[in-house]
Image (cartoon, rainbow over all chains, first blue to last red; front, side, top):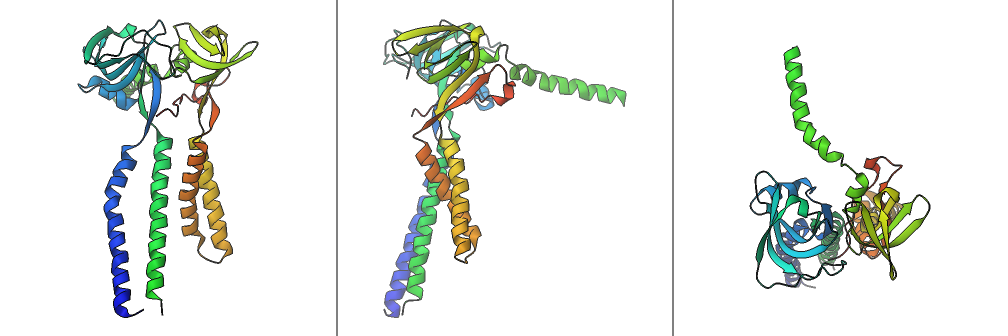
Length: 165
Length: 162
């Protein structure tokens, strides 16, 4: 192989590395945005981050809530304290007819968003999407492994080009 | 000096009192049950038997369990131990990282090359493969045991539903 062809191959390999570098930000975003799984907590015993969100105007995103009579109500929306005294909560979002794994509550799917206010005692638990460290970990390790494989392959190619007769 | 110690003590009390109150729920059994998701496989040990089924729901003093077609209502006071099925992904990931690191490190050392880089790569590959393979399987995780201190039982009952 002549020098010009070697240089061409090397530049192509460098271009491939640059393309991989361009992929890094979206991969990092995917990694740090994390994965989630359904979790249930007795209300209002949220982890600290969600407890802070519960205080704010944004609230905590929920999938369902249960009442003291043991019924799970599907609700895709947000929950937050409706008063400073924390004696009632405000749920804003869409009622849904089903909750994964739960028996039907009898609620119907609603297309229009609703805003309901419940006393603190009327909400027994909340079902929400919690960050899942193990899923995020596997995803992160997969990304790092892919980058390692790609890097090794490119290194071998460059090495082969550089030492080819 | 005494005044300063009193002020610090009072400050610490005010700072940690809410945390202490939250850390000790009235009934740890109820707290653990309130974290189980509907439909999640659950195993309960009572004073005289072990029941296995799917969690349906709970009320303030009892739990409803589905075993095939039958429904079992169990008062909290009868429950000695609670276990739920959770994903084995995190355990698989850790085992994979250890095996991968040791395996690739040993191979590299046997071939006379530096084992550290190979071991680091093995940790990543092994962890990824271990997590991926174990992600499809589940294991029983104890979330409450009347005989164990509260901090020993894991309250992580998240499932692998997406």
